[in-house]
Length: 492
Image (cartoon, rainbow, N blue to C red; front, side, top):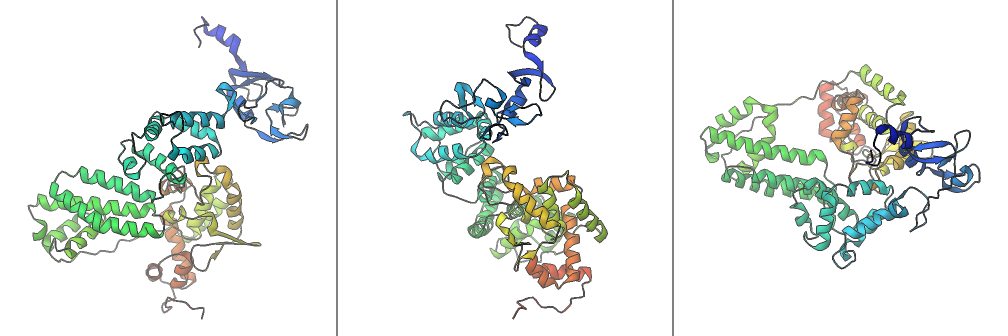
């Protein structure tokens, strides 16, 4: 409440009204032909664009006629105009009668000033990229984070060099990582695999927090010559998935746990025995299994004796029953109250046995349309999509641009995330499926087990992007009748 009003009653008498559009009692932002308008409805009205039914012009539609239909300000008799004094765009005006895009441009120009009154020459593409994106309000909100303006100023003035290494070393890593994505997408920095960069940052912190210097040295060598070399080779072919870097993190973490464990037994690594290795695995086999990559590396590099690494089968979670899976699929197809994104993902799990980590890496180009037929590029050849899943998928594709975060409008992903050029986080999608009552792993296991009962395992593997050894093992466990169908090209 303003200090000019000595009582709450006086403030409400002057400023609080019942909104003519939403019916709430709130502070008014305008008095238009249909009555007082609250701030929420005012902002919503100044974003409503289309063809005015009164005059037929394509423009802002802030007014309402007697039937409640959106109309332009001229037809509604609204005296206030909404034209930006800088660019002439008709819409919500901020301070200085500037639209959101011009306000964003001015703020970025000030933040990216290199000290000469001009934008740092190398950061001009970033300025143009951010201003050009749809929904500038999201970037204005981003700039309210106090860490963001400070970081932009440091980059503009040269306090922080415009290099990957310099940004990697910044303490506010989430803010820095998001900005680095923008710098790569705008062409200011060369493109590198984002998950690889995050893994390298995590690795540096993990090594730095290892108390024993010898353990830190061993882990650094293992990560450099085994993990990073493998990740960089994969990243050169295609973007890394979350599960790939997560597996490497688990391997390094459990390698560190193993080194602490053998040290507590007063056993040197080069004196480790089969008894020690068996005892290590006997306690928590599933948890400690990731350390096996480190153990093999130590044996290959002669840092420890050549020993036998225990190998126990780890079973998949008990799958959903066939009737339960079909019922879940029918429920997903009929549930219009759930977002299309989650429903499409559920169909990919329950019908095509796709893991969530692979679903989020799919692109819009993986959906193939040939007349009335729809197919998915999951393997080779593409897999036909039956009705009504095809209609659901096409409806999702049509709605995809409107539901995509503005920062990710130009990304190819079928399930775009909130970070520039990044797909949706698998954990986020997995949680959404769980809320829908779809356990992703159990549903996928149930689907693949049913599919290998209907066709030879190598055929299913080729069509759905599985390894034929994986589907053959699943087929054997499921009791499939296709016992002697060899993998390969059977089209000749």
